[in-house]
Length: 428
Image (tube, one colour):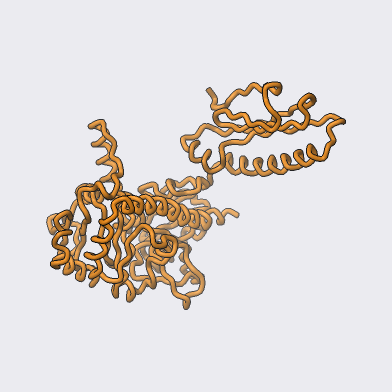
């Protein structure tokens, strides 16, 4: 009832060196002598947790080691070596257990209300918790950098100030929350690049920037899916549950749409180029199984040709590929939304990418991804040929989708771990 497991040890029924498993624990019993051995059982037990399964996979559950108490006659060399080995193992597991049982550190996240919720998406969707280490417990407070007065209540370190304004908001932070690290969002053109500015330090940034001329590097935190997409998917899951079905990620080869192209033309030349390619004769047969909706200008007003969040989410869930042209930045919410929907992003490393102020904006993604997963083209002109090639082998297409999903989990965990390393070091 309290989450602990009772164990009866029956040495006479166990072979030397045997392992007896029970739910939640591992017992390692070793005897040097079959007839004479005394057991001292040390038992570790974890608290009940909804994350027990993931803890178990990561740390092989909780460990229970028996320590042999040898009689005077049991002095043979193998026994002494085994005892020394067990002592080393036991010490290592003590440290692991202490780390697991340690309460997560509370991290206060200050959300600047002058920024719309899109910039907070990684926090509001709980992705930082999903991909986090478990060492941080996040709490959120909305603040305004335009209100020039101290914050009500105490804000203790570790904390993170999330803002889209460079100098004005950072000046406010230095005055009223200097103990907090800064997470700069919406810097789509990398106007703030220095990591070593002691007056306006930025420890974490939303868009990656690499330049050997700039000393040091910020911690880069990916966009993740946008909050309205996340909410739309949750609504679709609820509706599916009400019909007693589960909203599952379908294999790429079984999806209704071959690809989707949903974007506004006016945010970059790359989008103009893609719009023209989609009208070409080479794309004729491929367009039959596609969902294309291109607005002339970006707007929050859905009446101007924009697709609503629910229709957009449903489209990604039913598309084998999602075309993700460079917008204000090569990195877009669309990349992460499509991966989480099981749709493979297609990106062109064209002139818009190469000339963007955020140098090599998808560097971390490309370096860790390798050749699997996303599709990178030199130009949108290569799109018809590449899609036709990929469709020839449905088995490989589905395998690519699975590999992309596995990479995504590893990638996001690594980036959030770097964020938490910055935050938790504030307390050390």
